[in-house]
Length: 543
Ligand SMILES: Nc1ncnc2c1ncn2[C@@H]1O[C@H](COP(=O)(O)OP(=O)(O)OC[C@H]2O[C@@H]([n+]3cccc(C(=O)O)c3)[C@H](O)[C@@H]2O)[C@@H](O)[C@H]1O
Ligand SMILES: Nc1ncnc2c1ncn2[C@@H]1O[C@H](COP(=O)(O)OP(=O)(O)OP(=O)(O)O)[C@@H](O)[C@H]1O
Ligand SMILES: NC(=O)CC[C@H](N)C(=O)O
Image 1 (tube, protein in one colour):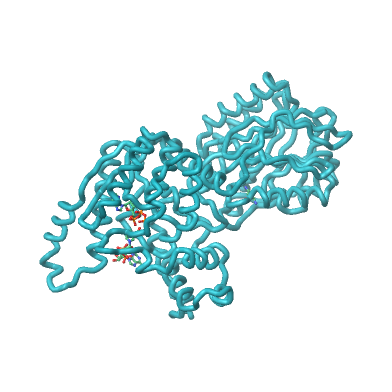
Image 2: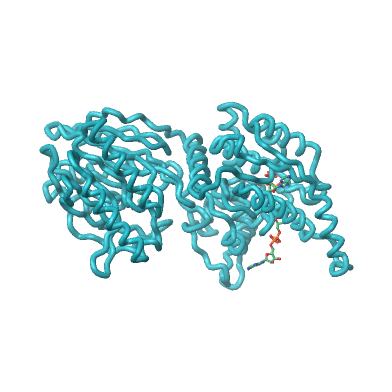
């Protein structure tokens, strides 16, 4: 029987000292408290994932090598599989080493380097070509690293090298319903090799990415485990019987898999970790009485505790009584800290100052944007003075269409719902309220309005959100051509108009704050369009 512990844990990118201490603690825990034969750590645990251009610095790589040597030295009475970047001459590899009794028994270099979506591994690493199979407690274990598990070759090579069990060290970031894709991948590798496979993922937010844990296993009979805890650290315990190929799950709590609670937990973890890892303890944002800032408020209160959330009401002449009532209701409901600061004097001062140059020009969106920027200025001042991290409250539908003011409501250091389409904002708000009221029902029921001009509604400038979101999810998230979206029954002029807005708003998005990715294609690293471009799907220069 092989006794295994899996460290489903959060390793901080670039914080090699903290990761070193964490790894030694996990080794002691696995050996002294759990008495296991083998501890598995995730992909690039030593540096955190993804270390990006840090691995191009020789000082960073030297420190990694020294730290790995120090950890290796201290390994006694247990085997450890540890992920780390490795240099060999001019080449770098994404590797794991197998440590035992102060020695490196073997090192495996990742074969399949993902270079799509948010991944850039070929920029940094060259692929490995050799399997690694090592015997521990009478079981021959073959090692894989993340993307290796998504393709057949490396697993097959490990089996041919004599593996009886496959162990995969991952840094696999969340997108919606990813646990189902992972299960399919495990089933495929099992079908090809007939081997049991353990898939360990890390957890934690890292800029745009959220690693959701949800580690998995499939035994030699093809039986899948439950996904392990969602977005939470756990030292999972599993025994492997080489005679039957079955797992005995000793400590493997099942994680949540329902769609809305998973998304909410991922957003919460992404926000909490961004704040904590960037050494902030509190956040500030404008609370308008609308749905976007209301969901942001609920997430912030859940992620950081209400004492660490400063909500600021920033009314203007266009702010309705209802907005003020609903914002106050939510502040009381969540117990948030708050200020009420009218932007009217600032707006007056700015329009007075601009009266001469603007003489003879009618009011238009310029005056709308002045209000959004007055708010942005006050939020940034509160951030500067008190050290709160400012949050931008925009959703994906707004970001897609450019329906937000650059340097205005787009200002902020982190954007918690930037990958959440407006229709999903409502679903999440309703789900959150089912767990206990966090968002006044009136906020959910009122029609969305920017309240930057008299009687303004979002729907005056945008198609209904149900239609808009369908177009965005097809055009942006699934890259469907316009003809296909139209064939699905959506009005052609509307599709072309929205596609045009999406392309034209690239410059805004590029200057927007990062935020947690929850879809297969978020704005950010996932979707890299030129800002300066003649292409228009709407029928411009590029046709
Ligand atoms: N290619 C490019 N590269 C770099 N910069 C470029 C640019 N094209 C324009 N610009 C700059 O961007 C400016 C235009 O952008 P911007 O000032 O944002 O203004 P704009 O996009 O024209 O207007 C913002 C819109 O968002 C709406 N809004 C605002 C606030 C909140 C909400 C809401 O419901 O949440 C909605 C508002 O009603 C208005 O329709 C130009 O004046 C120019 O300075
Ligand atoms: N009166 C206000 N007080 C405080 N912040 C405001 C106010 N109006 C706008 N803001 C800030 O600007 C952001 C964008 O405004 P907007 O009104 O468009 O969004 P919202 O009210 O959150 O949601 P919705 O788009 O549904 O109205 C808000 O989320 C909020 O952060
Ligand atoms: N780090 C990796 O190799 C991740 C790639 C993999 N397909 C995933 O997202 O799970």
